[in-house]
Each structure stands twice: as C-alpha cells, then as structure tokens.
Image 1 (tube, rainbow, N blue to C red):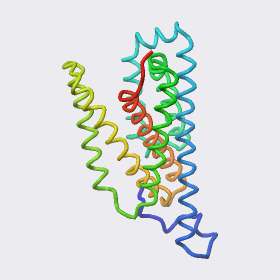
Image 2: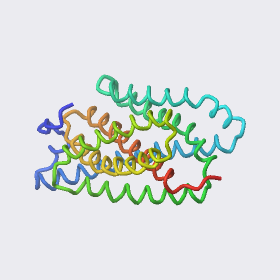
Image 3: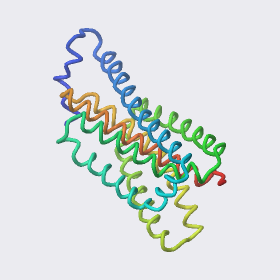
Length: 238
C-alpha cells in the first residue's frame, strides 16, 4: 500500500468541483468509518468483559490462564500487523474483532478488581482525552512523523521498564511507568490519527478497507492502553 498513489482514487472521478473540498469530505467519511470500527471493538471488549466479570467460575478460569490469553493477544495483534497486506479485508476485520473479544476476557479481571464508579470515571477521562488528541492529529498541518517516532521510542522504554519491574517490584518505577505510559499513548493518538488519514488516499479500494481496519486497531490499542494507565493512576480498587 502506498499512500502517495492517489491518482487512481475512483471516488474522485465522479466529482469535478474543488479537489480540496472533495479530499476533505472523503477523508472525513473515511475517518468516521475507522472510528466506527474502533468503537465496535471497544463495545465487544466491554461486553465480553462485563459478561465474564459477572460469572465467578469463568472469572477464576481467566485468572488462572491469564498469561495464556495475554500471549494469544500478542499473537493476534502481530499476525494482523505483519500479514494485513496479504490477507483480505474481511479476514483482517475478523482478526480485529476476534482480538477485541479476546481482550475482553482479560478486561474482565479489571472490571472485577476496580469499583464500577471508578471505571466509569476513568473511561470518561480517557474518552475526553482521546477526542481532544484525535482532533489535534486530524486538524494539525504539522507533520507528526518525527513526533511519532519519539512516542514509539517512549513506548519501547515503557515495555522494557514494565518487564524489569515484574522482577524488581519497585513502587517508584510502577508510578513512573504509569505517568510515562499516559504521555506516550496521548501522543500516539494524535500521531496515529494523522497517519490514518493517508490510508484514505490509497489507490486500491481493498487497500483502503484494510487500512481502515489497521487504523482502527491502532486507535483501539491507544484508547485501551491509555485507559489502563489512567486506571492505575486514578482507579479505586474494590
């Protein structure tokens, strides 16, 4: 997929007015579809999580095999990211929705661990922050590529520090990771939003569909991880 190949975009051929308005209108519609897929993924995750959290027997099973489910999530995300160019848009969609459902199994542990009022409060903060940063990424004229690379390096640092802290059990490092994690995913929301706009200009309709799913996955992961790090900072346990 090459975002620069826009000359063959079939949706443009039916118009003969201002190209800037056409592009802006089409990109807005495309982004709406991406957000639609993202919110569907969040809805599936939440529904599965609430269902499992309300069933004690299933919740115990999820807790006992939580590492297995975590590995399964990593495999599915890696499979979609690395193989999306070779799979059909329907397969990519199925993998994304399957990942959202699998993620709901582990989210059930969070729903059981934290007070509902706290979960709703943190979700509100996450949604508001996401909306603001998505608007920044959508409307800014500045190229965020360098900024995105910086956020990615920060993400790598957070992952390494998190692995180290599994063994170190440092409370100070825990809080540092949480604050840095919030900053990283707040930045990634803006960067990923701008990056997804380029997918709307891909020449092939099939590539645009796959780009929408890949973009939805990126924003879904940004939202989910921001929620988790904010929950670590502001959540109240049962």
